[in-house]
Image 1: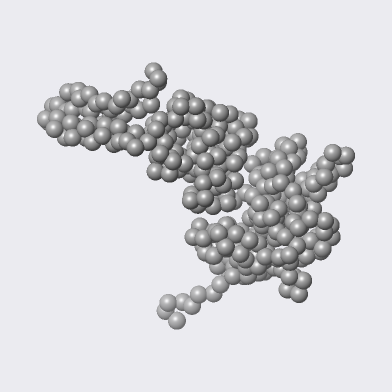
Image 2: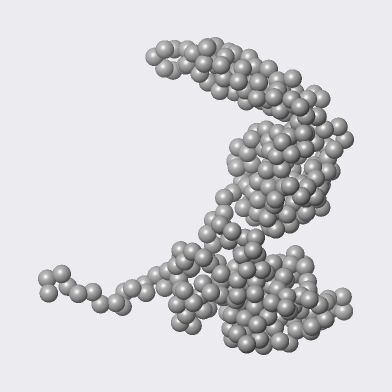
Length: 359
């Protein structure tokens, strides 16, 4: 049961005193809520304390506290509920979370330590970036916030609120930052050769080197490469339709035709037509093989997604305009492409002649 306590404390201000209201709630001997706020007057502290307690207690009104349900059960409810619309990338992330130890934790026992442990696990074991971990936390928190309204479960997102400052302090979650890393030509040659050798293994069935080359030429995300279908190939236009392409404003139904330039068209034509997909492989398997190969070669700070930037950069270097490059990359806004261009050619305006002011 939630409660609040008001404490009078001395301050450095002229008034010399203030009031701190502390909200606490414990379940099964575990503190699930512990927060406080400072106020100049006792009345303001009481008002805030009563309001916060009523909000916390109101979470259980008309709902039920989970007994044996786990976080995995909650994720399955979100994935199977037809009334809960989730985008493809979010659904993929929620399915992925089912494979981690955090999915086995009972909802009634879930606390900040569990969340921090998951974030540490992802960074240390999966070797992902803090920006990727932030996606896990955000998607999981969104399900917790919807649980009462959707399924009558008396849970909330207070664990995430409490853990957030610690996650930020420990560097376990970060906002996405713009990258400018490009593989050198030597790195590309080394990676292509090593991936070709990886394919020679009797247990390997993925054409790593071919997909690696195709990814650069088409500027596609690896998920897009693995989802294109033979029925979406336009033989006349030498183009392929990429379905539900990522867009900050719209993704579902955001189909785009992408021209296959250079050797990309020939690579596509050489693929066996024994599946509805042109590259019928799991994207995570491809990126895992790429990471292992990159690590063995000693290449640092290079992600598979950087190949998309490499492809766009090569188009700029070949003389394509920003509008033409956007047709390949699928960018609706040219701002990001402009940033890539200016990084490639920071002095591109220096050769232009400007008329003198006095002539």
